[in-house]
Amino acid sequence: DADVTQTPRNRITKTGKRIMLECSQTKGHDRMYWYRQDPGLGLRLIYYSFDVKDINKGEISDGYSVSRQAQAKFSLSLESAIPNQTALYFCATSDFGQGGTNTGELFFGEGSRLTVL
Amino acid sequence: GEDVEQSLFLSVREGDSSVINCTYTDSSSTYLYWYKQEPGAGLQLLTYIFSNMDMKQDQRLTVLLNKKDKHLSLRIADTQTGDSAIYFCAESSLYGNNRLAFGKGNQVVVIP
Image (cartoon, rainbow over all chains, first blue to last red; front, side, top):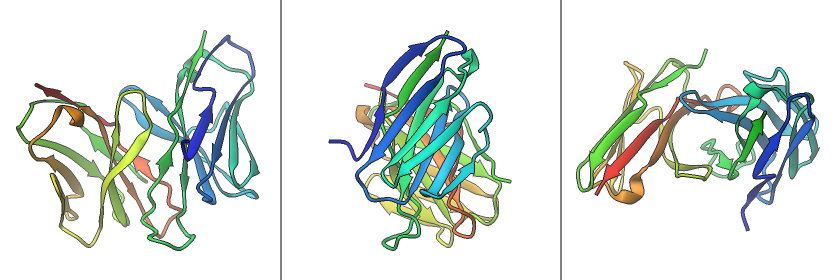
């Protein structure tokens, strides 16, 4: 089983609908991140969380919200989806600051492809 | 602020060497990374280099860091068809909050 699991893997929805993308991890990492990937634009950070009480906006948080329900779960919501939110979304985790090698490596899920019509 | 630049596409013949380049702007970067994304998959860390190093070699991979010019490169020797992927460079600062900044990615296509 994957250490970082995203659901759903694919979703097609209509403009104005509310969408939730979920991420769960079994790695015991405190830090979790949501990125979106667009062709030619690379990965851009939407939100990140260092623990269940610490949530921060990334560079493109407008139109998104998040919830850190537990150490292992971090969900991303689009309250009213619009077509330019069509993208591939990645959840990632990190154990930075928890001891160990502390290289800052991110561990990614396999992605959730969202299409907004 | 953080800004990481990469070229977008590279085509290489199987067995040749591939070189992917990246420039970054954050002089406080502590770690620089190369991630690999295979089709339909998430990103996986390929290798990383600490900012006080000039070079790191790991089997077929050689990472060169020119801190003065803020230039990072990845050389893949004896490129294989399994090396076809998108490669992202990224940087972070231990003095910040470990928010990795990624480049736009470089697609490498290996021709048999």
